[in-house]
Image (cartoon, rainbow, N blue to C red; front, side, top):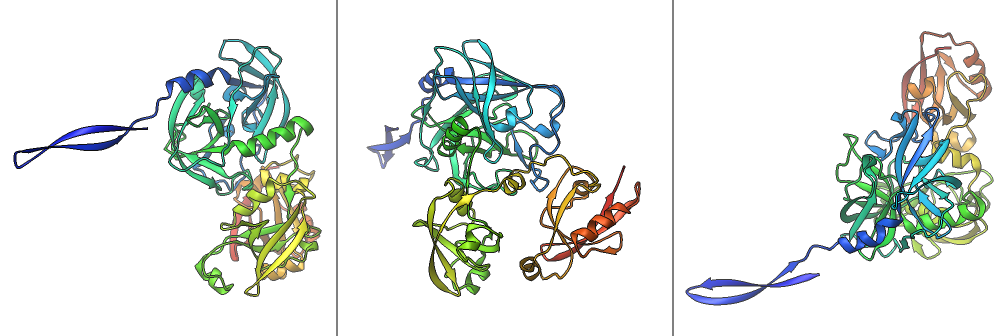
Length: 458
């Protein structure tokens, strides 16, 4: 896509003709004509406001927002986007567009309006598969996201602010992005683009220049609530794997290794005998997990999985999450500064882990005034955290704890001046706390003690 331009240059009264190579801008008009008929506008009607905790975990930074900010969503209709992937009427969109909806209406490009049913939805990938009954439906061309290259032109079609079939274009800025504390639990390697995206684009397709869908627009980075040049799309390779499971089973099963991991910096890498920071450092082994059965240890560094390099720690959940349970895998690890090969069979991600990763909270247990679920520290926790007492926060629900900025992973050691030694002790202290006054909570976060004020309103 280049044009050869002849440029006249004059030096010392001598005329030169110099070829200049100029890049031509891409032509989008034919692509839009072919692709836009399969893009739909989605209106999700809710009789009551969505639960506060249905979208984001309490730890998600303020500047990461889904295009359709559910925390500010009033009851009633709200708009998003989607696209038709089969002639039978299957539509793919974001889960957060339709989550909690009492009725889902689909507006087609030919002005037909139909009611959709939910085939299945998946909070971890933020995807939902819908179904409408109609004939002569246009269908998008599904491409591949893996071959996408940084710098490649891409185009989005959606309904920002309700303006149907709006088209914006840009380039791929990066691939394999993991967003901080994202509700996907790092199971989605996002495509980063500079395509202009705004509320209402959620669930809309991202096309390559061949007119193939390569991603699903899902989130933006913003400090203003609007587009600031950073958009994130779910790779279509991931989305179609999820859609296939949703169509067959109504839910998604993911592989589970059973490790808590962290990244390595230069000093950590050197201390483990690595020439540079790479791999996923195992900081926790979950009881009863495949990792425990295979005798993985805290301090192991996973550098390969089935021959695939694990360069960043976020690469590991990306790969494992796309595998199914009972998949046999081979890990290459660094232990005691030596390479070791471990073979194991993946299990399925437990339901409780899925809820924690997706930030979805079920109903608050009766009598839980603070809005917390805690568990006793096990020996591994005590050794890893350097603590001999306290309770580990495993879940934070709407309520005083979330309002006070208590987080999952904190260790509570004192409440209202009383020492907390166990879950049983914690529950007893909860029963005696007064209402209407601020209560001090001492906790340890990332190895540092911290006091937080919590106020109960019964």
